[in-house]
Image 1 (cartoon, rainbow, N blue to C red):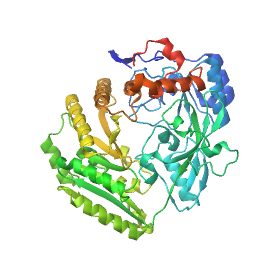
Image 2: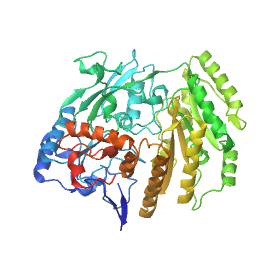
Image 3: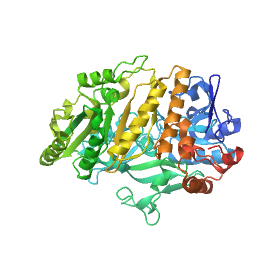
Image 4: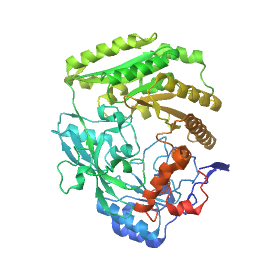
Length: 536
């Protein structure tokens, strides 16, 4: 997708980007007959309440035509049937957060936003087998509260912010930080509304009344779950979520690297600790300014010009977070936790500038003592501190390449990101999410003033340069912003874009009218591919 500036509008040349933003009265009447007048919004002011709050003020590139909020799976099915009859695209969202990636806004201008705030039931919590079953309107806070209200011996997986949807975060490959967050092992068993309104259950759930639908992730025959993650092939309306037992002992960790020159060794050390099983879950490593925010809950006040290297070193030294700070945790029986802590301490001591913050091991009855988000999140306690500690006008756009967990590979990506930040006149600010034993996702958070159209445009262009540079290095963005999805997808070009061509065949088979989230993650239906030349 190419971008060109024209006044206050950011034009897109993606297929289908010039859709109408009003619905035919007859279609509105059909939608009202299904979900009720209260849950169909067509007034521009009401619809815009659901758009991405981080996008260009006044720009309607990704404007929706309506917001429809069904209250049952049957209503979702009927809305999709109506969309097919009228040929109007539908873009689903759960809570509509997804900040830094385009929010709830649709890829195709004029689409209906299908919001699932009313589908908010925690359908089941199985304490013996440690799983829950949720609808897309259930937030991380909701799931945590449901477990707490029942007094269950379970720990909730959580991301950095509690207000998002469990299903929505999972469907966009978002992170959680406990054991099953690593390699995205959180989900098991989907119920899916297909683009034509049909209903599907994946995995063992294909057997009616299956007792194994959420305890085993494979199927008889092809496993379908991953087809619905970051896709536009169906709408997940129910999902199994794997939970952890609440541990007897829990030790939140902050590991520091004072000298940036030791980054490679630190990455390789984390890899070996992960492979040995001493570190679990997603380990998060932050550069100085990001660490002040995400580890200490105390962001460094912004200023018009970037900080110098000397100033960053001083900030890192004064705040005890060095050039890089790692947020991690150890859970389990006290003896096991103590053993792992010794192994981690010994490994980190081998890094010349490595330091480990003083460690406290918490027993079950001491969890009320947590104060920082770094302690809360890895304990599975939802928090909003990351956004509460930032000024309201500050927004971010994230670029997230997938990199082998090798110090040399991570260093090369970090240096390219530094160069791109410098070109943009911005402070370097990155987090490195260690997503497993073999991979990492460095996340470059491009900060900007969301009230200033020029600042938003500059952030999008910086993101475009980053995605391009990283793609040319051989690294694909894992979760691109709405405005950069086609660009990111263009780098998956093996064998003349065989991956995209295959997924387009799936798209055309299950969604022949092209009504479900056209363009999501670079997958456009046949009608939109034919409408314009393919400039991707």
